[in-house]
Image 1 (cartoon, helix red, strand yellow):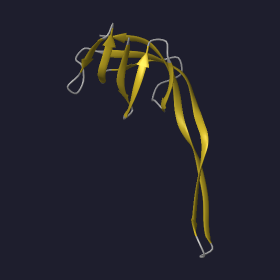
Image 2 (tube, rainbow, N blue to C red):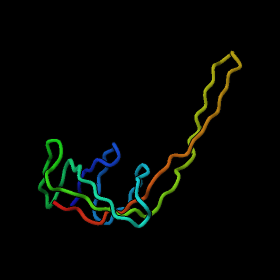
Image 3 (cartoon, one colour):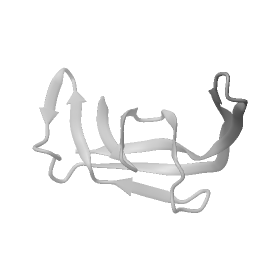
Length: 103
């Protein structure tokens, strides 16, 4: 059984017990969060597609930790002009564990 869920503007394929990294959520570590924008569900080979979302379907997850992702380096250069710029950032992430998919 799995579901496709919209979390913070991105779509994720989730299964019960699976841990995923998503953009930083406004929830404390150890808190449960609920996502109601379920786009698709699959159970025993039966696929249910929403228009755009499935009514009364929810995904309940637990926030395990907040962390920063790997550093991403952005390097810009214009050849023969002496222009070089190096910039980097680390994305803020939350690790969540999917506890239950309610249909």
